[in-house]
Length: 388
Image (cartoon, rainbow, N blue to C red; front, side, top):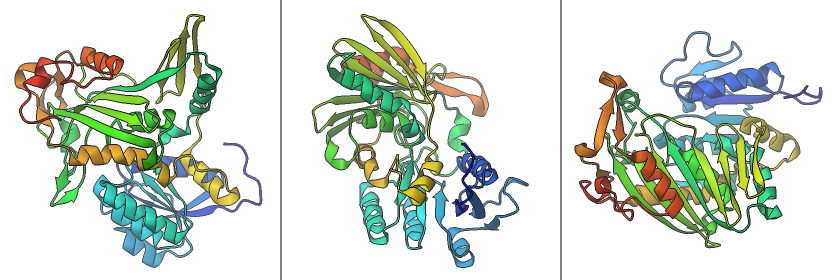
């Protein structure tokens, strides 16, 4: 970011959750504090932060209640904690006179989302949801591309995610891979956590932001790992405008590749690798590729506070994504893929499951806007339990 005008006073910020993705926020806040935009005055986490990871300006607390009791005049609270804690922590933050940055997914159920939206309305505070990919400048370029008609009529959108997660990934915390813990929703599946940005980005490009923008959500959920949640799934969404959006996602690939969203046009296609802000356009006229910049969501929220700049990822605009999460939460248990169709690469906790033929399955699902079961894939048809 550029030089900060002298009249801008550093915002007093607290961070809840300093491990996991919270470390990203620590680094980002360190950058913003050096620029004079924020002052990190407090952090909270039941597990103490790593030595020297928190600036001397920040007091350390075991939880948000203790932090709030001892820290006056906060202006922004950032919550980067396990999914099942988002609702209570978000509600507690909104009871104070502070704005809120809440990591994705917003909460673990549609009921909690509605409660949080009402609390935000009652408080009058701003809430930004941490779908960082939505800050990409490529999204504006995609809007302009569609308006130009360069790829013709938009016929469909797909998201493809091929990642690898090993056994250690599911041992990193008590909630990893869980649908619920002690009756509390978690919904830690492939589409709602590791590859949630793929879903959110596809929805944003499709113009589906709020709950009213979605007509239907269908799920086809599977698991190769010994977990409760899904790790290999197709989510098929139809927008209120009738556009199909199909997300084919796995963390049981042969190797990890950068996820991408494909715009299927009558005269060409565009592929957006959202983690790289890279947009590729292919038409009869040729092939172009461009890499774009990205707005930081914390900076955007601060600019919204100061000068009313439009939020990039406001709470209400997560409504479409929350309908996807709710469909997954209420779906039958993910079906277990038979071991005949799963191989394990690596040893011990570094071993990771690979669904045989998954790369081709993902490609077919997105091209045909079909579920794995509809494609007649043997591992889907023979999976144990009901997938959809």
